[in-house]
Amino acid sequence: MKIRRSMILVSNDPESVRLGAEDLLRNLNEAVEAYNLQNEVTVSTIDVSTMYDVRRSNILPMVIVHPDATVYGPVKPSDGRYLVEEHIYKGRVVNDLLAPPKLLTGQIGWLRVHKGYNPTEQRVVLERAGRIDPENIEEFIASNGYEALGKALTEMKPEDVINTIDKSGLQGRGGAGFPTGRKWRFVRSAKGEKKYVVCNADESEPGTFKDRLVLEGDPHHILEAMAIAGYAIGADEGYIYIRGEYGLAYQRLENSIQQAKEYGFLGNNIFGTDFNFHIHVHAGAGAYVCGEETALIESLEGKRGEPRSRPPYPVTHGLWNKPTLVNNVETLANIPAILRNGADWYRSIGTPSSPGTKVYTIMGNVNFRGVIEVPMGITLREVINIYAKGMKPGSTLKLAQTGGSSGSIIPAELQDIPMDFESFRKAGVSLGSGALLICDQNTCVVDLVKVLLQFFRFESCGKCTPCRVGTQRIYEITERLSQGQAELADLDEALNLIGEMERTSNCGLGQTAGTAFRGMLKHFRYEVEAHINPRECPTGVCSMVTETGSQFDYLHIA
Image (cartoon, rainbow, N blue to C red; front, side, top):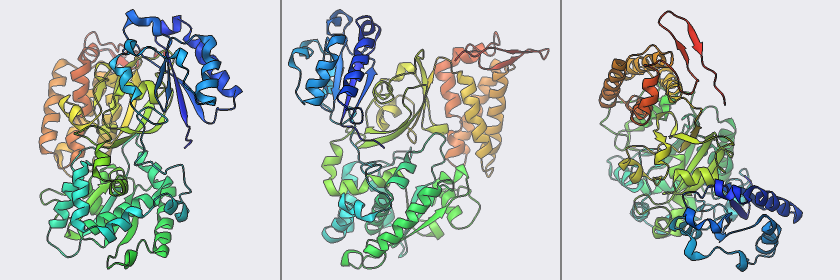
């Protein structure tokens, strides 16, 4: 993961392009190369069409330079080399090119107050990933590693640790957003001498690979967090349940556990105290349902990976029927930084209702695909325009599918809603695990939902009837839609099935399997009904079959 010190963003809305933004972009890139700064600075574009008043287009083309979020405008193509030389190479603000503050809208003003290589970037979870040798414990220690564990064991009582996590406002990053401090307190107060900490590293959600970056790039980070959790809840043993396909991560975790034992950070009498903690790594066998905490626990016990009926919950009856704390990788990765810097520091990031950062994986019809970590509350528009470097040429945003297969479908008109738990909940969508699939105008929403439902019907463990039968029936309805053989009554039947699955399924798989279908009807019903009457796929993706059996393959022009 390359770390660059600056980012230059050039406005690329139609008015900016008319005024020479493309030539300016080219000149900026040439200047960056001329000063041999290409490994330190990146140049990209940003759509500012919603950030300025068209009557004030005399500030275009606009250039925003981060990390200090300096806004220049108007900038002529011939100013490109001058701007790079002065601001980037010499480190001096170019006062004669600054955009007049009175012409900037509140949205651009908001960008100017953020710090980081990318606007609004502040790493907590990924603070070391890509920056240290993950197989060298000494590099981890040199970058504040195990400092939080030492502080917890020598300066804090278990209740103090829980209070700090609770005060920080950290919420579970697995998708549900349950308060982490509250969950820890439930386990600590549960009766029983033997307790466990389980790290859910079974990252099986399609399109999600954020946890893999932490496990492969900073494995000691998770070991430290688990040891802190063990001290807080009164556990002396922990398990990491890792996706079976993550071979390198498994290897590095095993290596890190051995190193931590040799250095005294795991094992008996850690930091000279009477606290003992041991960690084991267990690889899954590829079952998506084992990402559900009770199915994961069943698998750890050597049983078939099927969800348990609840109550009781794992906080009182978990692994081997003992009180068990289950947190996912991203949630745990926030813990050490919170203890080192304090709850107030953590609350200064993100929003009041959803403090901290969120790690997203970006995929789809955008110019950059990968992993980012940004404060809670950033909008989808900012993610696409700034971090994903805009839609691909010729593409316009149609929808985003969040949180993997069980996430929501978000239409383009909702892209300015802050991406935090409360705002998304009010909008009727879910944040999910952090996968962002960005789709353009050539995406057929029916085809997309069919692919998601195919995944669910395959991954259903079959234990409960609502999920086992419901996922199959909804898939069949969606398949008929994609072939032009469905009727309007099928849509009502599917919604009834989804409602029953939400109410009666045994776990989150069945309860959320219909989320994408419901979102499709809510936001794109006109497109769905076009598959019924006149039995056409507006995007030309689906193969439509007539009543007589002949098939029309509409050309999909990407």
